[in-house]
Image (cartoon, rainbow, N blue to C red; front, side):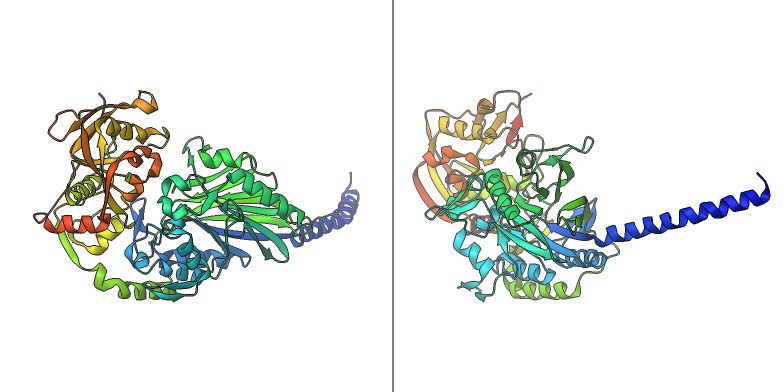
Length: 531
């Protein structure tokens, strides 16, 4: 081909290519115009941690003011952003929130611009009436009138025992650029087993899958194709295989195909994976992380066409705390300071809730000792979920002890036989996958993980080393949660001659005050694994 021929060919090619290139670009523009990018930022299991600094990779993280900064910075990246929380926003809270009936946490969530939330098991800690007061507003004798949350709470699977109606709206619809996005709420059906029974006496927790799918069907009839689930239930993700296991996986596999994302909670874990085409995310706990879910939704079909998740850690380094939330938290701190700052004792070493392989911890031992001392019984038992924080070295304040034991459960003494005590210890393994290793005082026990779940306790001895007598009756102390069968420890409900005493927190405060100072506690071999 000659020079003229080559030039002619090039011009001809260009004349054909240009319209196609323009068409492709135009088609891409049209596609972008047909789609909306939506960002959903999620937090879970905040537990009122307004001012408690956490650690991620050994570096400071968390607190409300830093969490607010991360949320705002992410919002700047996308004007179409919704913020959600997946339960346990309050409950088991440190004193800055708890001493003010957790109203500060709701006010901070309002300030952060939360769009929708659901309840976790801890929202029921003080009963249905107090939970609804925090949501809808109302009067409390300690704090006065409270305006409540400025965002809706949803829960599809919690119904009133008498009316059989949901106690909260099952779902809500948020609209972004005219596109409806449905949010269905649900909480673990395990709730009655892990909260004080009086807190849930008026409600029933129906199957999560049944309730969520029923509500998804209703939303679909309304034309909602983008459906999110806020589910306060969790699981765990394998670091190598990335497989997610646990109840969250079992539930998600059975959910309606139209559901796009499941925002998880409860297990305080890292989740970012896919189950049956559904994105599942969970961002640790206590404000240490948020889950950032980016969706692309088709304007015409109103359905999600793309989704991806990211877990964002709220590390302090290089970040400025949000000034508005920072001022709010300082105001709350000033209100509780006279109570919180009282020095109760002095610890010679840090007393941590970290357990050894057998399940024993220094903090658990200290608390069990305090309860046995206060109620003057042979033995005491403490549930591990009630030990919420470490005790720092040095001056130990009322606030420190409150953070360790925030539930204010009354102590109950009772009588049990040695056989019943062994049976109660075997109930540690009623859920073999999540055993609740009881902290003890006045006795020791040895368990064998290789034995059947209902027969793992192989030896129970008094503190002096003598075996307990299965036929002898002993006096026992447990907090009200355990005494009423919490965490499946139903044997404690069989205890006779029950006497209710002071709260567990009061007992701990009094016990620490009377100890020789500085005081300490350590792992002593009260709980042992069989060799």
